[in-house]
Amino acid sequence: MADKFNETGVTQIVGSKDSQVAPLMNYTAITTHGEMASAFVNHIIHYSRRIIPDHKITIEDLITICHAALEKDQQGVTLLEGKFLRGRISEQLARARRYNEIFSLIVLKLRSGVNDASYEAIIDALRERMRRSDMVFTFRNRIFLMLPHTDLTATVRLIERLRGLVQLSFEESPLEEVNHLAFPSPDITKSSQVLDWAEDQLR
Image 1: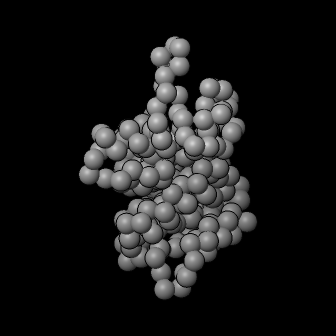
Image 2: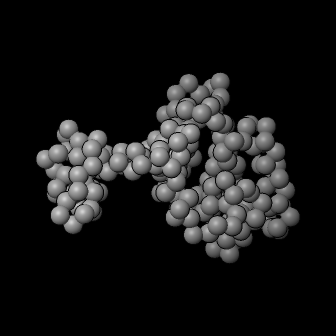
């Protein structure tokens, strides 16, 4: 891939496929045109490798870097809306395949009728007791936890602590059910099974 400077001095991305469309690049085009988006991302990765020469930067790595740069709350666990769950699981699966990383998922299913105050109290309690690398995803009556570098044994211990915390905090437990999954696992032969499991937990 070569760099080409236009009249304004802005670097354009020129490759064998994009040489015809490179002069037309703008924000709208890059976010809607697959080839332009790919060229732009590869251009960033190319220069990222100069900054971090000891690591081969990938698209998944770039996504992780962007998420870290955009984090508003630098203290405690990351809190995200549920719509980001599938994408984050896919990223974690990619890291698991590439670097043999383990991770676990926990889903807390809340009883119907749990009020906002109780919901927020559970979220706050989780964020205070989890690691900064962990993530919490919020749904209407589900709370998903993603725990990088956490095996099945540690996940089970964490669930026991969470149950004890909830029992101490509420006269009547708002938890209806707690499920978990650890990856890799002998029972999981394909990465898609992890995504399917997560989808099933939302039903």
